[in-house]
Image (cartoon, rainbow over all chains, first blue to last red):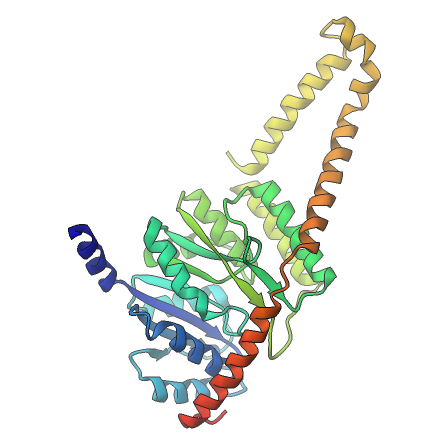
Length: 249
Length: 92
């Protein structure tokens, strides 16, 4: 009994900083914030959302300001940057201003649903994982809006990656994850990739440092507004990153 | 040890075993009887593994969960969110 009370006191001091990098997400940002509030506001977890807008020409920052007025500046923090500078540096920038001891990163295009965040937190607490990753590839997870070709590329790439790298995590290119703050800092410091393969390198480095990884199946609903892209250059980037990690880790 | 080195060491160990069998370094009637099979065994392994890979990948493609429910739920929540945010004074 005493242990339970002690545990809950520890839990109370935990704070979760959600980093939301945005670029032209005027349509999606209000919805994602509303969903975060819906699923976290009554959960009892202490949290903040840090919006890192990279000078979107569509006025994302203006919508973000309105949302800050509605939900309060203790819950919504704006840390905009002048121009598009890339995902990795967006996390570094956001983390500098984060007051939580846990960092949650997710996409702001509604493909990552905030309803999974409480599941991430619970799983992290159960096993004291260093990071918890959402996965589309495990039972209960999945994707919406992908045709045969897209699924084939995704499954094929995943198979080859698992074979060559044995990463101990099933979804390497997903970017819906919860990290202990110092763990994320260490991973970012050691990563060299840019672009979306950055996510893959992060989890491979995590294995290298022997961080513990938990997984939560997530449903991934591909871009509701705007277009999702997977072209030749993404595949080349992926192959390069795969070979680089194969030869160096 | 990097993954590349792991692969290189396992593959060279397998190659050494195979080479000692076909090169006549190990003598055994069973080996002589099956020498043709042993000769082409690497190709058989590769073909079987390829078959396994294609089967697994295709199986996973066809059983990839489509999340129709999640998409529907999200659409409903988007409508609800827009309405609620408009009430709270947000200008989209």
